[in-house]
Image (tube, rainbow, N blue to C red):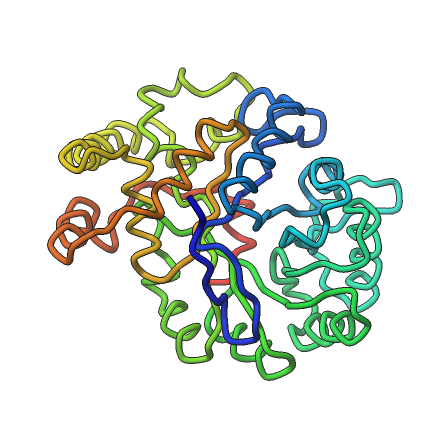
Length: 335
């Protein structure tokens, strides 16, 4: 199977219809956010994705910090030009490589952050460089101006933003063309649709990349109780997986699973096909080959208008499935 290529945004970047989220492949500050990681299997997963046409990898300096970028460098070795790498900056990492938990979008920090990412990725350019979160104390014009300089210097090919409002996108795009916005989006999380962000992106010719397209694993059908999550899994601390939402969400998943069975696909594949039917690029995260194969196979699934309507009637726009982050992290989103 060869993955269909599409244009992301209107600035010239061409990528596969589906990317690979790499965050879960490494430890985060000494712990595993999504259970145990296995470097050999993670590298094999990146290679298997590549064999199937999946060469669009998503990472960030925050993941580790830096361990994830280093893993990607190790996995791709001398084949750098065969991959499309997206990474992010913005969560401030100090000179001792510790996360301060502040967001920094200042011109000085952008220039410092890119050098660290280039070093950890063992490359001299980044294909798509995202601002991970909006620094509410720095004008977006300053941050994007600094990112624009990186494009002129050849260190970055295309620039993007993450978890931003329509207003921020418009202001940023006026400084330098934005290629893509990356935000959480799934059958369980449609804030960008409710707030009109997707409409703004369409009007401006900006692409959209969906992280956590499987509702942080809920839509995979592999989670039946909170005990199915590893002990230190960060999802145990977020509202979507708490008692008041959990059982209702399981009912929604079961209805989606029933529909998937009728189509002879998995619930994950159905959820991904729904996203791709909207012209959106999902980047499901996995660290195992069997799931990357399953995810890429979803590209072949065609959904009729009736099936799309049926799926959306299970989880109508506006359904409250619980916040995807704790209160602190929710406060950093730009909505």
